Image (tube, rainbow, N blue to C red; front, side, top):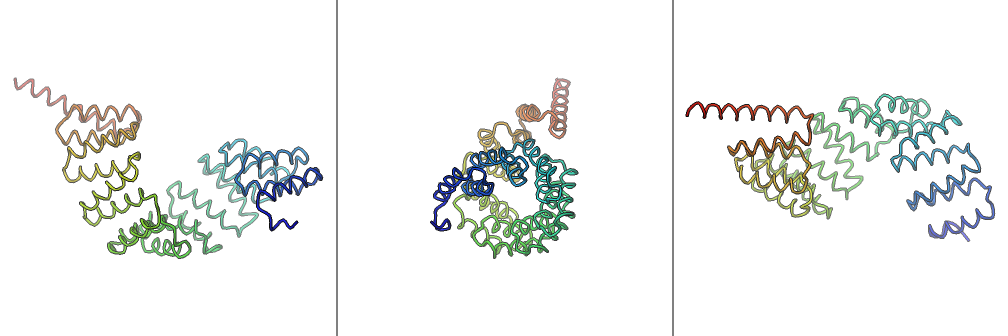
Length: 356
């Protein structure tokens, strides 16, 4: 029986029988864990690795594998405990340091994550994924200049790395380098022509470069590529607003809402559009719809308060601002707006009383 010609389940069955005959053969455990990993059956991967570690507690590959499984489960403390055990056995394995960097990155501990990533580079300076990970660290800190430098290094080692190309495109977008961003996104689109998110990224860059027709063309491509059109409609509507096609933008937001009425973003942006065009009563109704979808969104309560204030309904504005503060009591912006509106309201009440 040739293993290459078997299905994944058949390979697992054959290997399980082989392991019953050879319970001390370490390689069988490694192979079986890889097969379960291909099935994405992480519980069985961990079961096999546990059995392997019972036989050979110092098996670095199994320890790293268990650390990775717990990382997928988002139990980072257990993940780190396995990586530390592996590191004690083999302190020259770059992958362990890289994985430990990933744990600290998830914990938002920039300094420790950077330390372990740099240690990984000391041991393997030609792995593009390490530089990509460091770039993401800096990107998360909004240090886009440093992030760009590390993406450039990653791409110098792997010019067709799609993740690095997309991430660097996003960083260049943040740095207002729209032409470079567009070039990177278009390269990704050649490599992955069915990726609607990249089509949207290209369209967004073209929008800010004021290329209206090309931007619209890429939004239309994105819509043809996916069944999940919600986010595409929203990006398209924002672009239409940039080009002052407000009526079409309004319709596009409504199409987004029809596509998924249980997400709040399209309601919020449509209401903002109404507010900006002094259609205050319509804005108020749409903000209320957003709150029916997302009752704990403090920002929407604040925006609703602004709309009530513009509609000269100060009491309702105060109630909305108070709701925003209840949800986010430490938000200084909400508290400042609330106190200013209350102060103005009380002043108008006093002036009215004095006039009598």
